[in-house]
Image (tube, rainbow, N blue to C red; front, side, top):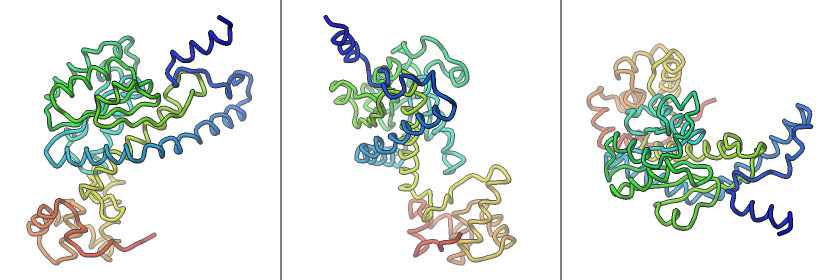
Length: 313
């Protein structure tokens, strides 16, 4: 076999995320500015790759909405960078959308220590993926999203297999086309193909960026559909620090057309809930009545208060 044929055969055995990028072959000779230019050029391909998956991402959003409305949970499962991104997205849902921490959960091969220190070999234990889901009490109402840049991580495969046995809904987020059998075994496959990395196999780069965009869309899209926003305002946040308390007051002031002091007073009367405060002020009702109306409307302000919130700078 010729050397060229040998290289071709080896490439065919590699996932796209493990192949060498010819555009960055001499990056070790580049200046700092040239490195930046190369990375910017590669990263510019990511949004277009994600856009090719619009229908699959929308399908995942719909599944997540159905899951939450039925009382189920969303589990992200991954190893290494993929696992960390899942944990990150899950951990940002409570402060952003006021969700229960149990609603969206991230599982990473090797457990919590793997968030800050690589746990060698953890991703290779397929049984651990199933075990970790069992430990969270996985049910058929849940939605398991496996995240694996190469589409072949054993830990993720084990989790998805366990989810199928239980009857839970499943999805795969990958950056290299998975085998047909894998695609058939999940409810939806999201595969933004970004090509070889700047540094061979370093999937924290383009693959990680694409994965972060996809996860952002799944949870943000689902929360919007669940009434967690009013227009594009983040009205279900948890005001757990000074910045978020100030943001809450500013939203109530802008939407209700009142000063900050009055907004603070309405928020206090609403128990700190921006959504409840807006409904109380708009309809001239008390907290209990506002909460009942919101509950009847599935938490959507738009279904309780006619019209869109005013646009402000």
